[in-house]
Amino acid sequence: MPAIEKDMKTKELTLSMGPQHPATHGVLRVVLELDGETVIKVTPYIGYLHRGVEKLAESQTYLSALPLTDRLDYVSSMSNNVGYCVACERLFGIEAPERAKYIRTMMSEMTRISSHIIGVATHALDIGAMTLFLYSFRDRETLIDLFEMTCGARLTVSYPRIGGVRNDVSQEFLDKLYAFTETFPATIEREYETLLNENRIWKQRTQGIGVISAEEAINWGLSGPNLRGSGVPYDLRKYAPYDAYEKVQFDVPVGKNGDVYDRYLCRMEEMKQSNRIIRQCIEQLPKGAVMAPDAPKFTLPPKDRVLADMESLIHQFVLITKGPITAPVGEIYVATEVPKGELGYYIVSDGSGRPYRMKLRTPSFVHVSTLPLLCRDAMVADVVANIGTIDIVLGEVDR
Amino acid sequence: MELKDIAEMIKDRYPTELKETKEFRDQLSVVLRKDRIKDVMRYLHDTPELHFNFLKDLSGVDYLGKKEPRFEVVYHLYSLSHRHMIRIKAEVPEEDASIDSVVDIWAGANWHERECFDLFGITFKGHPDLRRILLPEDWEGHPLRKDYPLKSDLGEKEWHGYTETVEIAKKNKGYEVI
Image (cartoon, rainbow over all chains, first blue to last red; front, side, top):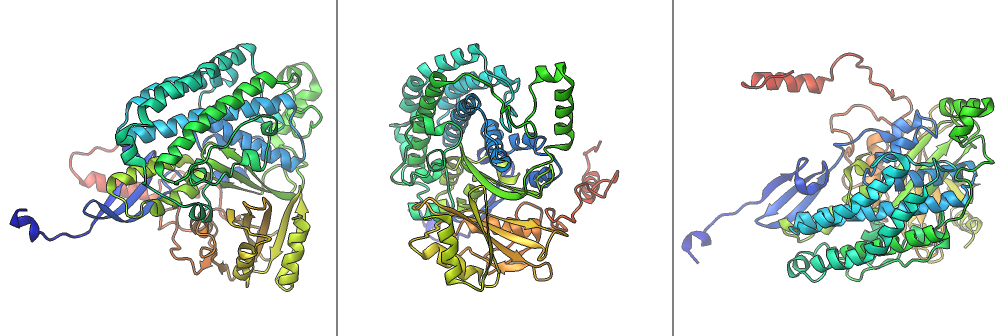
């Protein structure tokens, strides 16, 4: 070794990564304290996207607060809507019709696939495996087009309603979706997994990186694939079933080592399971209404009736402008399994038409807080892998 | 275990701390005094029959003008092994808006408590790193309090941060500000 390197004096370096950085998946700022390539301390700073959704919701009626939930995790808006509707239905004590439940389950799982596609693809892109991004976004496009076909919007859908869904799905939608589910598992195996599962570089970059044990993961409140990657089979679709999840068969994949690679495998397997659920939903889809008919105080009347008879018109007008005025006094915490993990709505009702307090327990918020834990003894490059693996969306972190 | 039995267990162990229990839509709320909240939480976490090992959520609620004391800190606890959930509500008065931190028990409470501090101004005693989290460090007020206005009182005026930035940009040559 040349003499000059022996006497070289080094000092710790503080590096600010973000808020504008391609690998932070949004506007996340991470301050790294480095000793050479080794990370000593990681401090995440959030809040750049804070819009005060919780404060805004207090000024909205229960119906008009729905579009706010789209903008939390904007890559899986359908799941957020479903979670909100399930929570409100529980608060009001109403039940959506069977068909609506199946449609919502189906839509939630489509969202899960498209969200996991973004999660895994951008994660792989950060680490250097670019091809997956190109393949998987083609498949995501199919799903997004199907959303557009049903509700007119691609990303911020606002399709579910309290007490059902906005409109029925068409036969063409079901046919196209079914055709998609026939080929998708093979696509995952042939195109996604062959690129990464046994890829030597991918394995070196992910195996043994960002390890978190099951006890730690529970203690830190992780949920979704991040918790299941550590071997804890906690999935709200099984633990507290809502909508049609009780009536469909699916497995909950869990990892063993709790590292980046296992979390990746969990997401891949979850996509296949979601595919399974969608197929069952289409096959079992019952006939009937898509909005709860016997709860006129809370649910909007069908559009054709609004245009035809006076009573429905008045009813819709009152609901939109004043909200359901007889929301029972009480408080409720309802959580659903969104692609990122557990999304909880804590709604306090004071009997008026607006939520007195609506707290959103978003999974990404909890997941970012574990970044210092995941980056123990990590190298700079592992920080990028760790940000990718917790699969965060900053719209949800900052609210 | 039935939810009622959980309430009974807390009542037997901490008769003076428990104020009331409520059940709504099959969810149990337990209202506690805040002074020994950490003991109760430790008990809920460590007792094998209860084993509330998962902190789902921690949030604040402001009941300004609705009841006294003004604030409540609400914990949603879940047991992964027994699959039961409970809601613990600790009452926090306005004049002494502080409560013991539970970060030692559930590490995940760290950011939730910071958020509650940021948006409600409730101090968590014993928290390792109590700073604002969602809002800038120099922000004034706590937005989720009910007496905090929904709309800005600036009206047509620009926010001072923006005008300052414009001034700095003007001083630097070569920049034009629209």
